[in-house]
Length: 210
Image (cartoon, rainbow, N blue to C red):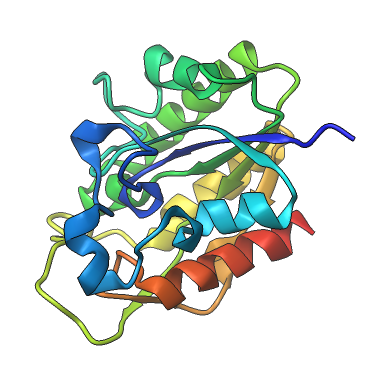
């Protein structure tokens, strides 16, 4: 039986040195001591792929990236979306992005329009792929270290953005991993997971995938 190819579109939580674009990696060698995340098998996404007996296609996750905007790092960017198939055409695409849109106060209407555009471009380029999107998980600080993450304008509840994702998933016939409904995951700064937090995120995804 052919194993499924998984590609990932995400933000800093889904990065790992040597596997995601080098210009925007959070989980690199310098973070290993702080987080306990020392190898790719510690990431949530590789745990998910291995649980499904799958293989990695391409992970285009970038620290600081938003869905909204007209940058090469934006979730809507054709180049970024096209890269998901640069190794092998994905059978499954896992989308874990939106936290930075909340953090930097992207207007919910703009977020909804951008998220829908991103999804439609993904469907256009990968019409046969099974598309999974996740709501925004909630983190809790455990043994906090230096504050790496600054929530500049995130005055709107993350639930607003998660509800938009759920609405689009329903209307666009996508699969949903409702991470917002799960217990908070362990982090070093309220956002970036430690090793146990990665496992908690992986377990939530695996539960959704069934």
